[in-house]
Amino acid sequence: MSWPTHEVTNQSPDLGDYNLFDADTALREAAAREGAGWAADTLRATGAALGRVEVFEAGRLANTYGPVLQAFDARGNRVDQVEFHPAWHDLMRGIVARGFHASPWAEPRPGAHAARAAGYLMQAQVEAGSLCPTTMTYGAIPALARDAQLTRDWLPRLMSRDYDPRDVPFAHKRGGLIGMGMTEKQGGSDVRANTTWAEPDGHCTWALTGHKWFFSCPQIDAHLVLAQAPGGLSCFFVPRWRPDGTKNPVLVQRLKDKLGNRSNASSEVEFQRAYATLLGEAGRGVPTILEMGTYTRLDCVLGTTGLMRQALTRALHHARHRGAFGAKLVAQPLMRNVLADLALEVEAAIALALRLARTFDEHDDASQHLRRLITPAAKYWVCKRGPELAAEAMEVMGGNGYVESGAHARIYREMPVNSIWEGSGNVMCLDVIRALGRSPHAAEALAAELAPAAGRNTDFDHFTGTLQRTLAAAQLDPIGARRLAQDIVLALQAALLLQHAPGGIAQAFCRSRLAGDWGYSFGTLPAGCDVESLIQRALQTE
Image 1 (tube, one colour):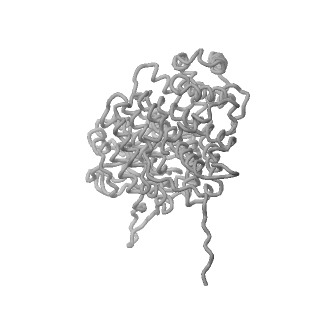
Image 2 (cartoon, helix red, strand yellow; image 1 turned 60 degrees about the vertical axis):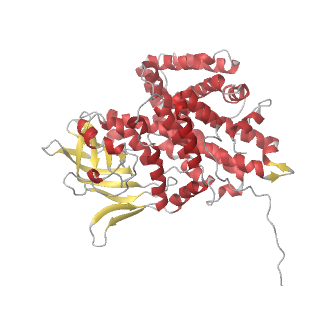
Image 3 (cartoon, rainbow, N blue to C red; image 1 turned 180 degrees about the horizontal axis):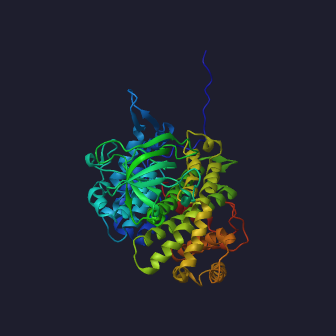
């Protein structure tokens, strides 16, 4: 007996090999505009390498088969080792080879941070957990460079492009990575409530006793840690191995079972008189470690933007192939509004992220003030928009987007981490107020950024005029800090698009984000917006 065949049709094909750089007009233009034009060939090669199906599959495998803690060996000896699927090491090997952990420090040149930002944004589209050790190393290097001994003994190997995952003393390794440990059970973001204690041992080194509630990547070579010392809260360098070749007693209690970021090992640890050296000035631990935090906050913006970009890419790809109600999804008027609105959000995020990265390349006073103000504001707003955009992109896919075998579920679960890590939304917005309060030049730097777009759109002029009056207030009310951070970012995104994006795209952003007549739900672009240009510009693979 033969069974009748049943052919399933109207399924979008898998998103095959494509170049993440060539497919992304907004990224190509932003990289060139913000000083990384010299890196175009390298970025194109990176986009081709990362866009391969097998690389995305490595991202899936690293999350499906997450890290496993092996606290003891077969003889009962404490080893605190973390086992990873080979896909994790493949991803890390590629990241280090591309220099995303250290290239602006190892090979400084104009536009180095912007070039790295463009590459990092593409890497984020593949897998997010492996970005954690990448980012922490990138942020730690300038802090370590302030110490002559660490500069001599650690920086050359940290800048190496040779990924070496072996758990051996650092002197025997070809390359290395750095982590950080700040938060404790009783404090969270309030790190001044930390109770971990550092005692001097009489040999210019210290012994740490206490715990960390979130201690990322316990398997890597060293961590920057906050602890109370006789001189106040201080920053310490805590290597995985002590100078005598024995394992430093940083005991891993367990790995976190997290919503997302599942490929990455986040842990709880206890210090049992762990060996440490003081980094920076005693009692100045927060400013010392926040130098690292400034760079990691940049990467929160870049990482979220990359996830948003990949969610959009997959939604557009699906809509161009899936039919519904007699036409392709991409031809349905309301779906076109949704897709164009998602594309508009991603374009604005890319423009902002790369402009922010350029402030890390520039060392004039105005750039420093702008960086201080925009970094927390951008982290707040972009990371808040990410989960909403990921959910809407998943809805474009329907049920196919909701299952774990696809990429959308993982993207959605990844989105909240960048809002929480390195300071939650309230912390970021209060930091915006702090930046404005400490320096009147911050508002001046922002005004200079907005000025070239003045007169190009009446909604922009009205919005920025209101913003400028708010910034001129004698005292900013913390209760309005979230709205202020949001408005600063929207104004800067609009200014960038008015200057650099096609006219229809910039006008659509101002009408939908600044005019106040339309909701912030995606798919509410007002009539007359150039949705066709937004959709076509957003994905150049087909």
